[in-house]
Image: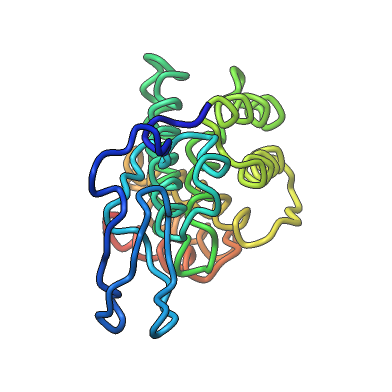
Length: 233
């Protein structure tokens, strides 16, 4: 059974229409259930301007229902997934507001670091949000809990695997991961630094000396120096 919104038996007048190509302005004929079309005149491919992608933004069967999803929708799906992961993280921790605040702080730094260091924003933010979801905050347990949460939300398999691999590696002393893992580790260190500065402002000089080596990325090192200098993120 097809989704009623995409089944032609439920279509109304206007299900076949013309839209102007945003590149050359020529009319391009669309069927209601087409995600995108290529302009016959200039070859530009663009998203169906009248299609409602609302359910596809979170439905795990969207690819089977709609075919290849356009990049714009894939980005929308990942943004919505990050929001839903944040909600699940808070539900998981319940009234443990300290851990909720810590996860949020790590996620905030991860999101700020992702683009400057060339990491995947969706992967690093989700890993940051879920990195301590185990009952005892141990990496292996947190990884399995994160996997269960992401499967429940219908996340794609490659994202689930990478997020869980990053979380499982968080306690290793000699990390071998790539930019995404480095970004999450640096975000965690920055969050710890921010918390330490808030609790012990008199230790600024001591904390300044600790910011010279523990970071994998230059962007995080720069951010740490700005934190020490009193800047807030």
